[in-house]
Image 1 (cartoon, one colour):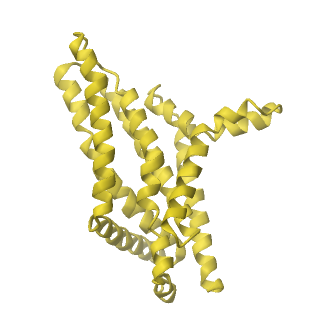
Image 2 (cartoon, rainbow, N blue to C red):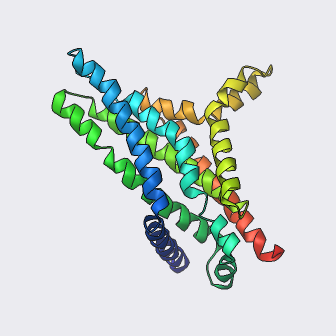
Image 3 (cartoon, helix red, strand yellow):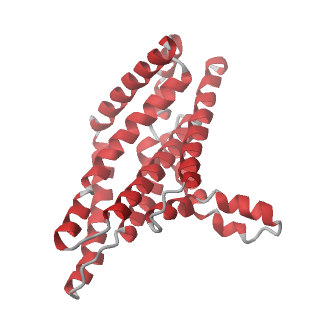
Length: 251
């Protein structure tokens, strides 16, 4: 129990430090502002049209889906430096000499970065407030949609950290992260090209978009979908930890 408590404290310290470092850089403000600007423009255009027609829009699924799709590009942009910077500047060697486990470093960095992105997601809660003032939206459906947004974002942030652990170059990490997230976004399109139905079903089950739609579009909180996101996060963070740990012996 003492070792678990020590690990949690270490992770929390790293997360707070990473959170502060991110908000100490203009990059996250720039990325967050663009993400909010695009979402705000979509909100104004999509819902504004319905209001002009005298319709009270109640469905936030199109907007939340837009937020998730944008995270395919924005999550790797935020996470690209998390490990790559340490490798480029050589500060990872200092971490290796400290009594901190590789998993604690990776999980702490992921948690801090996810918390930073969650700040911008929290700002978008103004949208359902506006809808509630002008109609009676389904709060349960909106809550399920935001759960899907958070889980999808957490998954893409974990993939971004995995990409960042592979290289010391931020741009390489960015493109690897975006490419990996895009593959998971469209992987179900390739399922139909496979003749074997078992393999086809397995490929389709890897679709980030499909599992997100179950929460965002269908408002169904299925344990299978929750397990998918949690499993993907754990796998990505474990792989990143293994890659980081291998550098202890390589250099």
